[in-house]
Image (cartoon, rainbow over all chains, first blue to last red; front, top):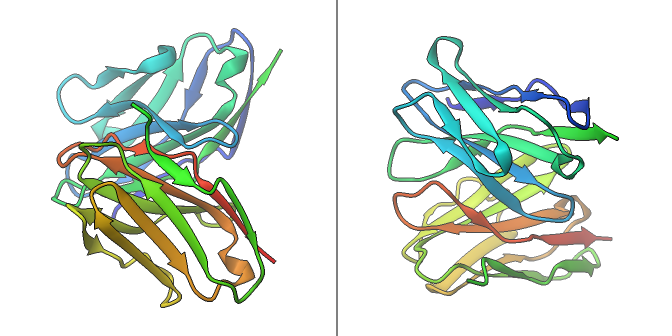
Length: 114
Length: 113
């Protein structure tokens, strides 16, 4: 069965520092992978997605993620965090069938120190 | 583009009452998803529709939950009777067939007392 694991419940970084949020997936084939961000009281917004091709994908707000098949990982990175990046981040895997269903990880809450 | 519109934003109801949550997807999107978010269980897919037809409702927790999509621009999620354990944020999301990049609504925070 598909699953997504985000091992870090909370991460705190200083403003201006680099960020890496971890995501591991379990799927029998090459998955479709996504990162979403949720600000307090808001819905989820798509940051970036990976379907195939270049394993380093660029997203909005300066985020990028790298797909590593050997590690079953899709970690999210940002070189310099801004206070406005404080939010909850969700990794998700999509089934490669006609359902277009997304399975979400449990999320990582990012706190940014001034 | 107004995005996915959900109403109400907040709902407080008494146990046993009927609750109806509403969603208007983005025009042109033909897939619609209802998710529930709680601290304990995270984001759970309840049901999804494709071209107004329910495709998979295996995530609906029990018979008290029902969902409809009478046309391409409107969907409802109904809970009857409601229970305190139904308290959660309910999200609606839509996309077009073949696109996994869902657009989420802002959610309805349901509190059942």
